Image 1 (cartoon, rainbow, N blue to C red):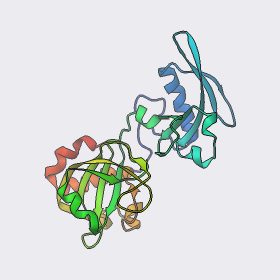
Image 2 (image 1 turned 180 degrees about the vertical axis):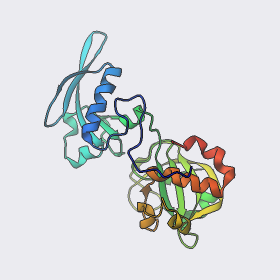
Image 3 (image 1 turned 90 degrees about the vertical axis):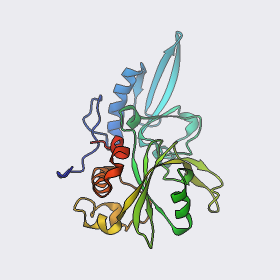
Length: 255
């Protein structure tokens, strides 16, 4: 894949939209399709909280559902909504691991086949050997990390390269006792996908015409970054330097 790709929203199939929504209005529009498929009857969509009143019918009984639409589920918390006054959050992306248990989270991105993201996570010297010697582990992950997401581990100085590619075995979740540091964390189980014999150095990323302007390169790989929109270019670079891993990564090629 060498042709230039503009960074448009991800394409989705089997939906009344060609591309993934980029705001809450798109979520509302997609929910109308979801509701039809799942036989959810919409009684009212209105301004103010909650956004929608709907119901299902089971064994002749009608069950009321109070729904709030959000682009990302954690916006519910940011908007200071009362979880006791709502039943469902319908969102494009579920990024709130600590969501109250009484709330049902309907994550539409999963419903329309966008099943994984790609994350870049830095690893400092203290923990590098553990990754290299393991095939399964329990790790600190981004709060939005889902089951089957790819995690590209970036080894910090002196290496300054990506050499380990893992996948999340479960959705990341909140834990009160991090174990590796004082206080809480968001963690989850991970499995190794492959190791790179020829790692992807920071300088490789800086020389790549499509990756050099990405947020993770401009930040010199500090922090945890969602690299999903740049995954086609990262994939090309990884496979070009490491042809042996192509088979293991081919199922993660979305384009």
